[in-house]
Length: 192
Image (cartoon, helix red, strand yellow):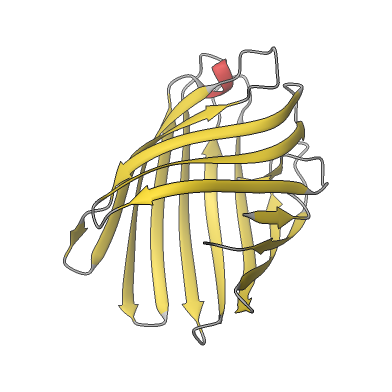
């Protein structure tokens, strides 16, 4: 479960800069996972108030590289606008030295937000754990949303601290997309 000051997805606020309540439940083995996740949202063009995601995938490893290959269904049950879509997702992570993690992810849809357009999001990430409870991370991505919504680059940097059974994340986002500006999010989360 989580409470965030600003739900930011791929550099774009999904709550017009306001708070969001989020939560999900997963079932996972060493190789397979399935789960669902939900968040409050605030319009962002489709008159929605809730996002409900369903996902499943596999997590094989080849030597030092860990993979995550799956599918995500994005559902907006609170809107009358047809905006649900499915993405295929594939990512890989590698730790050349123990505190450092490098990652690359690709997410593709052939009907993004029910526009009929193909979309592709590619993101490179890096994380460094200074201690078991404190780490920093950053990401840089390109989101091609298709002919209707356009393409932009987005990046973020932030830090995470764990204490008292809670995770605290403070993150700065920026993008070069038209109408997409700087965003900051502070998130408190707890896993059970």
